Length: 269
Image 1 (cartoon, rainbow, N blue to C red):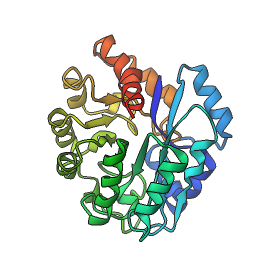
Image 2 (image 1 turned 180 degrees about the horizontal axis):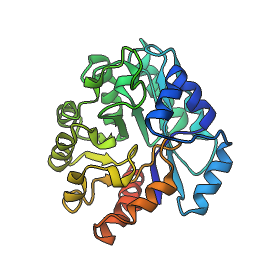
Image 3 (image 1 turned 120 degrees about the vertical axis):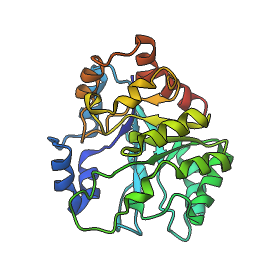
Image 4 (image 1 turned 180 degrees about the vertical axis):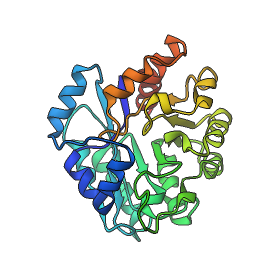
């Protein structure tokens, strides 16, 4: 199995959340224990997860903090993604340097926590680099459990899936993963994934029994477009996998979601 949406190391992730950490843990009803990265990956490997897409995030301008890209070099089981703050003046040069030095599979964006509209001209310049490099791009879409119930400048509109229809047209070499299937605009996300060959949905951040039925109703049509992701440590992979076993879809589709779709995406970079 491949967990396509993993936040680690845990201490760095909690430090990044800052004042939003406690409300986020409450929002997800999570129990978060600080453990070392190797210990965490060893445990989940014992459950059958062999690779982990660890997602750094650079929100230097908007939040004044980041999870550094260097964390993806800490373990060979990590599928390397990097993050660049699109609002930085030198963002394009920084991304080009990271691609050369780290050789990532893709780039992680969180428009809400990085404070940019997905169609912001500054972000488009980064997409152009990703498109030309043939890399993946993971975007947080939908609501944000981070910042929920807390006064902030976080704008949920920046997570609307519909904006990625335009992005998918402009950047057709860039494979786009819409994390969290864009809830509450899930039907938008489904429609785009069905229409655009370069758009995929990860199922992270939701325990499977709470995932909208519209996802499972379209699972056959989306059989090559859905990716298992846990959103660890806010959702634990063992819970996700256990609940997923009870979802009534074909075994072949489940195998694609748990491993083969992610494997194909990663190996084609």
